[in-house]
Length: 338
Length: 290
Image (cartoon, rainbow over all chains, first blue to last red; front, side, top):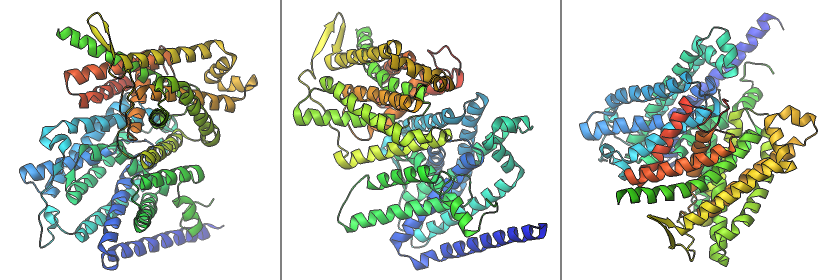
């Protein structure tokens, strides 16, 4: 192939990707007019999962650091903004400006300790779990946040949507999380094409080689954990104001952290579309299963989770790279020719 | 008087810790030989616990007597799991093995939840409220039996690894994979056997544990984390370390429950884990630096 032809092929891939993005975004923007309230809530759950998946993906997918304690950052974001709102009357967006540094700082502390002391791989994963569990038990005994009894946000019937205070109907929340997902996507896209993104990929593939090539791996990994924690904290703010109740058990539990990684793992770790596709597939199918069970008159607690487990198992065994990479190749959306 | 209270709680903690130790020993065998991070360890223990509960409530069979049959069932379960599901993953990256077992764990917890429901179940043995008086110390009979059974089981396992030919072959596999292949050992079978021995340990531990705690499906992840805390504290891959680590964590939890509040006890276990990971990643009782 001549250089021109290669360039043209790459242009084709780029154009098809752009078309896909525009169509997807248009469909998502129009969704509130097309679906009922129940489906809109499902869409919110899907986008929430896509958003947190994208944040986690920066750490694991880009920089290769397996975190299983991401619930910590979302939980800190949720609790900080909720406490500021309920106890001090501070609006969520201002609270968000506080919870981001708190989450980023905690991510930085964990990252500093782990990377400074050479805790890596599965040990790193266990360390992140330990911190999240530590926070869970700690918040369970913290009277400022009502401990295990849970922190509740006042739910008032608002006649209009108050975007500034994040009080309103599901449609408003839908657009908020959609905007957040779009911003996170753009940010991930920017990061992965930037210098730091290439450093991360080098670290993911072979940390020793990256270091011997002169990359400051410690600093790069610190950026990854701090950025990832900061983004995740917004999910927490959203969670607090959407659900209006916070329990340490639910917010910081290991189950929450595992839920966050399911989307990207199923969609494709380290890809841009993977977390989004994975969230759509997983939550979409799980909700279908739920409705089917409900329609059959069966109430089976745990069925959804078994389904998650089986999906995770099948994808890990059969599609180690996730669903997106083979799909992208088939659709001609992938730049590398294999 | 107060000293007696501490002594009593400490003894109870050590006895529970021995059962923890046996559970962690299983994880340590699996990691030490197969090098797989078994993130479904506690979930496997909860299978054993429900087996014990069902056998007790249906046929009134004592968990201490059923310990060996349950360990045998779990042995088969572990063998099949390793041979069928995990062996093809041996060459995959660490995180994908890890996620495979996370998936197995999620499935186990929720299948148990669907089958048995979320309510706690107990085993009411005839000696549930008995105790021994040893000087100033009042020892709970159930805990004492469980602790002794854990020591006996662990001793049997140590003897197997030290003296039997198969045990030696397994240790050879753990020490030098290529060397084991060269001398003609069937490594895949020995891996499956080691994984099975690990799950047998956790099966026995689960059976004993029903004497000490109430059984719910949600115990699984908690015990997985606890097993990791213990094994990392004791030194991953070190068998004696796992047992000692179990005693240490059991003691810590018991004293923390007494000094602070019982619900905050695992906070101290996690604090120990963090400190060990940072300052002595090879474990407290392991000489070899990894």
